[in-house]
Length: 356
Ligand SMILES: [Zn+2]
Image (cartoon, rainbow, N blue to C red; front, side, top):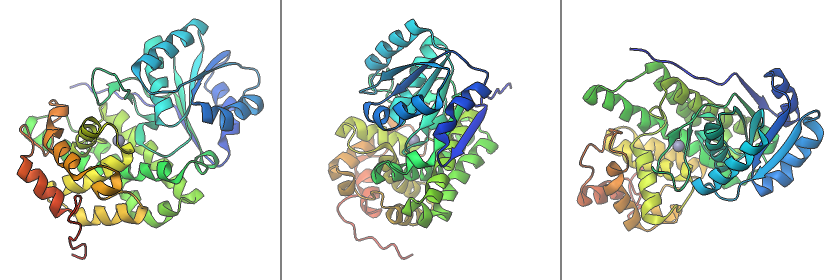
């Protein structure tokens, strides 16, 4: 069986590295016209200075993204295509990068990913997820040609957004278990190297949870490296399997029943508690770590009703029928969903014993 791997060429990570963007692009052998895809706030705080100080010799067009929807991505795509840029530069959070990935796929141009926040592991993965797409999960694009992560910029992001990435990393614990299960029960391709890499990024969160919780430069660097590693695992696997399992299905289901109630990393973190319980692994440790990081561990903290969590648990298996997970083909019954949510303290009865 043939398996081919598409990877980025270069990752630059460090304090103040945004000023090296022009050098990085030249190093990649690219010159001429750049199309920067970004949000209005990041444009004002980061992009304008970078264009002035670090993109000398390039002609730069900036495209602002308001909403991460397919319609927005398509109209931005048409505008960018008419400029015929040599490269797309995505500067911003997951939404801006997702739009840039979509544009890159549509017009066939490379993109550089410049994440400004450590909120999830889509920063360097070859998959994009936009509202209004034919699926609620993700479609394949290409990985970025390079990734540039400036810790100084990431340090100015709101705490809630920054820490959410830790929840996305913890979710690899159940994602990899679901992948193994699909391999054993359905004969699906499984790559131990990609699985181990994804797990390592999750383990880093446990090992360095105190440092990450403080969001110091060191904590942000660990988080950013973990997110890039997880993206790399996706590139190596050629699918989101090492990074997305039943806990992601739960999060997508919650987006449907409660219309995108919280951040992706917050939702999958909570999903990981429940799915680890079903997998029979140490869910208490996961819950404790999420608490330590200040991430939500209950429906209430997530800003949804208990009923939303229960409903999402019962429909999660239907989100993506080709993705076999611990939820099986028929999913959880309502009673079972209520019981797991109760036992893990995710819904109202938050009196479970975490001391075991
Ligand atoms: Zn994720």
